[in-house]
Amino acid sequence: MEQHGMEHFHMIQDAALVLVLVMTLGYLMAMRVSGRKFKRWPRHRLFLWVLGLLTAASALAGPLGDAAHENFVAHMYGHLLLGMLAPIFLVYSKPMTLLLRALPAGDARLISRALNSAYGKFITNPFVASILNIGGLYLIYMTDLYVWMHESMLLFIIIHLHVFLAGYLFTISLIYVDVTSHRYAYWYRALALIAALGFHKALSKLIYQSPPPTVPTAEGRTGAMVMYYGGDVVDLILIIILCYHWYKKETPAQGTENKNTKMAKT
Amino acid sequence: MKGKKRPVSARRKIMLSGVLIGIGTMALIDEIIFHQLLQWHHFFDFDTTQFGIFSDGLLNSFALFAIVAGIFLFAHVTRLHTYSRMRWYAGIFMGLGGFQLFDGIVSHKLLRIHQIRYNVDLLPYDIAWITSALLLLAVGAFLWYRTRKNDPPVQGD
Image (tube, chains in turn cyan, red):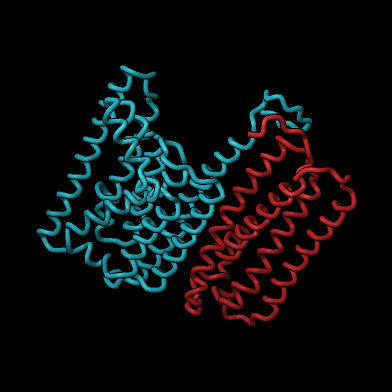
């Protein structure tokens, strides 16, 4: 990469860190405002918010971000953090619930109307979200987008933004932790998750078969395996959360009036 | 939630839990022993059909989901129902054998995703693989047959 390309890249890194700072301050402010009207917002959610933001930013800035610019294996670790792990932390910080509490009633109503709109329902359909998420990855790695991304700053920003937002959308379409507009059945979400993970696995094998043209073969193959097994680890978290939610809903807690002989001790 | 739940025997649920856990366990054994420890299986075989890449991805993704879902389903059954432990074992063996059989015939032979081992005569390996699958299935079927005979005809799922 030539000199002014590097300068641009450093600007993006700085911008990512500034964004983390601004988003954290925004969350803190929302916590204060919400605290005036409602019960105090739990502190551990702030921790999860900051953790999620830092996880996402580490794909761009810091040692991993630096390496990801030159090296495909580091790039894949970054992809797992930005598009898969960070959204899980962020969902558990419940930003939408907090936003709705902090905003004046009129604005909050506008937002919840937007969430409940036909468009909102459409993109939070788990299959649609999976296609936006995994389909986007096929576009990046199976076309020349990956090569172009390192030549154009604008494309670099758009692609990273897409990976993050699509990953977040995918996560909220599968696990209902935050405010959710339309709820789909467990089996339906499970099928979408299985399909998405299956296509993610297939994509990593396709990358193994033919890595992007600018990436050395050995590096491309290692990166593909990182994508395959790393994807397993993060999606395992999603699977456990989804199944646990099903279990909690379908299995009444102890103390309800059923007289089970086989009641497990907790 | 369905309010009052009577402790009915969960015949189908416990079987399903066993089968799911069996499928997931065999996929794990395949990954840990044959891919990682022995390194007989290869991550990618350039003979794989393009269709094979996708079907294998979906199969393994399903297996990962299956083991988690099977465990939670088991936890659910133990809290709400009476169940036959034997039927659970039957399900597990059928899941193990079923996955192994599918892997041995469809994945290895039809789609050529990867072979059991490379640079050796494959025939004895394929025979051992498929025979072991049939044995596991037979054990599962035998256990299932026995629980069918022993189980009192309880109503429920």
